[in-house]
Structure formats: structure tokens, C-alpha cells
Length: 409
Ligand code: ATP
Ligand code: MG
Image (cartoon, rainbow, N blue to C red; front, top):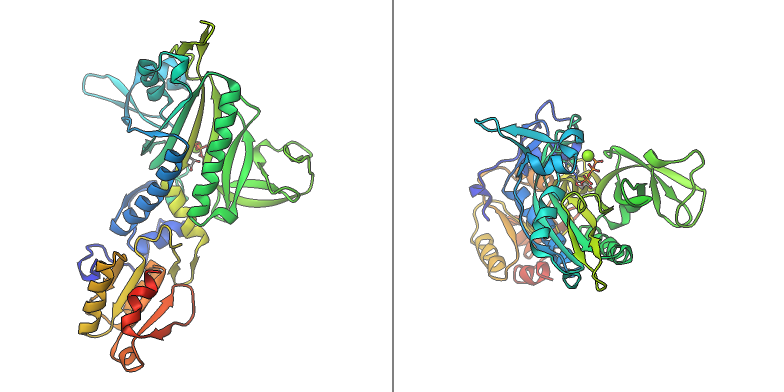
């Protein structure tokens, strides 16, 4: 991709009303644009990050047997009345058409997947089974002050699992927990992400959140100093005790919930009469689990914890592009390296613009690609091109013919 052709540009300043660091950096670097509070357009560089996050999530969900589907955002009111949530879910957007029919804009999809599964699952032999989607959610968030960490429209991966027995749900739940750990490791936030006990809601004593430490987080968690599991402050009893190891020594941290997993029990299967006959011919209402991850929230969390005063520092696994090739002055060598990198399928953003070296370097730091390769008359005289990893203070000169193999490692 040639930077001269990228229709988006970097900006000196983020909008005045944008108070969060993640959105300020992502807007200035040209990854997202703010349409209104809590609603953002994802621009070409941002979309490449989102797709990489999406693919990591998809691989791990496929690995635990999830079957990918895509459900509608526009949903019938009747389904939400049936579960009782039409009247109780505060953040549900409701829309009316010209004949006064009412619909929900999906804030979550139990009201769609439960009746869907009823059409196909008739026997205990069809169980267990799980399906997921990566799709837009709408929520009437009153405090949309955390940039892309809390959107009113945002992408979520939501997986739903269906089981005959509680034990089977428990097993699958642990598998999903493992898959989530892999996802956060691969995205580069594993070390800062803690499995956190939160209030369970309908069916189990606890649900589990995956909380990533950052000052930008809206949650407070207590991390057990003995076993590293955490408890969300909102469920803390007077003398907190680790539900896992019974430890009582905690440290308190601010964190953002990047994902959560939940045992739903029969809360959504019962209203839709979602049941099958077991081996003995008894009618069993299916037991469900649900498992969510917010995609923009993940992208924003990475930006919050991986940046410096110059801009973003992308982990290689989700960087929009691997190499920022910068040519200073017109030179044939740069064009050739650009073509060679493309031929070797190395993702490259080629800054071929007619602007000053200072501007190019500042933009490269702001955008934050993992490798910066500079080619100039000076570097050529010094023996080749300069290669520098984004956070390193200094680069090194390597010969022009080695650059492609160096960055394709
Ligand atoms: P929160 O407590 O932060 O509002 P939640 O409990 O409402 O989150 P879930 O309904 O469990 O979240 O949604 C699953 C995942 O979707 C969350 O773990 C989070 O990663 C993401 N998510 C939830 N709300 C938003 C939002 N408004 N903007 C972006 N991502 C969100
Ligand atoms: Mg919420």
C-alpha cells in the first residue's frame, strides 16, 4: 500500500470532545473517525487491525468446535417480550417502523439464537453444540466517554453453547476459558489480563470476566497475590477471600473487561421451549452458556497499554501492516524494495509522499508499525537501509539485499 494513495491522513489533534487516550491516538493516526459519542467509523488501517483480531478469535472459536453464523441486528419485539427483556434491559435500543411496529436492535443475541436452535436441534444426539458470530451490537450506553472501549455500536464475538447436562456445560466452559486465554496471549495482552470472578447472575455463583490492567479501565479488580485470580470489586464481600485458593491477600487495580463467559442455564432456552428428549425419553430443557469478546474494546485496550509519547506501538500479531518503508527523496531502490516485499507477501506501507523527513518519521511513530525501514542517500552511502523496531531508540544499517529476508523472518 502506498501512503500517497491512502485517502485517510494523520492529524495533529483529536476532536476536543474526545477525552480518552485510545480514541485520541487512533483518530490522530487515522485508524478510526468519530461520527458521534460512542459511534466510530473504522478506517482502512483500523479495519486491518480489526480483521486480524477477528481472525485470531475465529481460529480459537473454530478450535473449540464453534460453528460460525451471522444473525440479524434487527429483531422482533415478541422475542424480547418472551424472555422479559423488552421491559427490563435498560440499554436496549428500540426502533419503530412507519406502521408503528416495534423492533429491537440487538444488544446481544440469545433472543435470536434460542428460537433458531429450536428449529434444528431435535435429539440429545445433536448435543453438545456451539455457534458464534462476529457482528455489530447496539447498546444505549449512557457514559460513552471511554473512546472505542465503550461504543453504542460495536463489534462483538458472541458464542453460545447448548448442553444436555450441567456437567457438560461445565466442561465446555473450561474449554472456552482456555480458548480465551489463547486469544489474549496471541493479541499480546495475556500478561496483563486476569481471569476475574464476577457476579454470576442466573445460574452459577460466578461468571468469569477477562480483565486487562489499564488506568483507562472502568472496573476495579482485586488480584489474589497467591494464585493471580481476581475478583471484580462489585462482588467483593467485606473481607475478600479468593474463591479459588481461599487467599486473603490482594492488590487492587483498574482494569477493562475485554471478554466474559457466562453460564446461562435455562434462562433463555426455557422461554422458547428449547428442549430435547434424553436417552430415557425424558424432556430436558437445554442448558446454555454464552461467551463474549468486544473487538473495538480489544483494539482500544491494546492502544491504551502499548504506546509512548510519539504514538501507538502495535504488537506484530495485530499490526495493520508489518513494515513501514520510508523513502527520503526519490530513489529507485525504494521502489524495488517495495516490489520485493510485496512479492514475498510481507505487508508494507510505503511512504512515497513528497513531504519532509520529519513529517514521515512523526507519522511512522504515530501509526506505530512494528518495523521502520528508511532508505535515503545517506543510508545508501552507509551501506544500505536503516531498519528499526518501533519502540527501539536506534536502528541499524543493513545491506539492501538483506532487508527482505530480515523482515520476513
Ligand atoms: P460492561 O460491564 O463493560 O458494560 P458487559 O458486561 O455489558 O460489559 P457483555 O454484555 O458481557 O459486556 O459483552 C461481552 C463483551 O463485549 C464485553 O466483555 C466487552 O468486551 C464487550 N462490550 C460490552 N459492551 C461494550 C461496549 N459498549 N463497547 C465495546 N465493547 C463492549
Ligand atoms: Mg454493559
